[in-house]
Image (cartoon, rainbow, N blue to C red; front, side):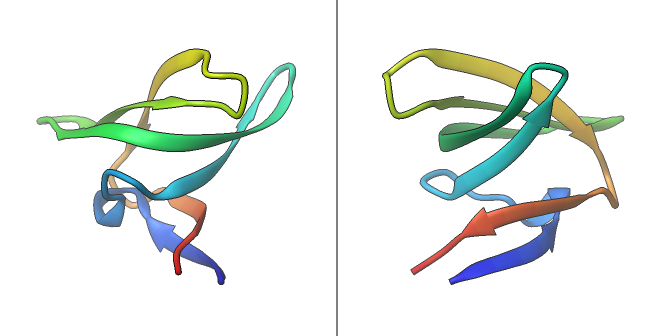
Length: 66
């Protein structure tokens, strides 16, 4: 099921649809850190490439959860 959640509700193992300047990527989250100014996350795409980025608290994120 695809749902919109707030950045602070992201959890490891979520499948995140993440938009970048080069398009949308689907990432399987491996790490979610809650920091002072926002959320830092790391995840791998379907090819196994590692991506790292972040979001501000309160931003909407689209993810797939079982």
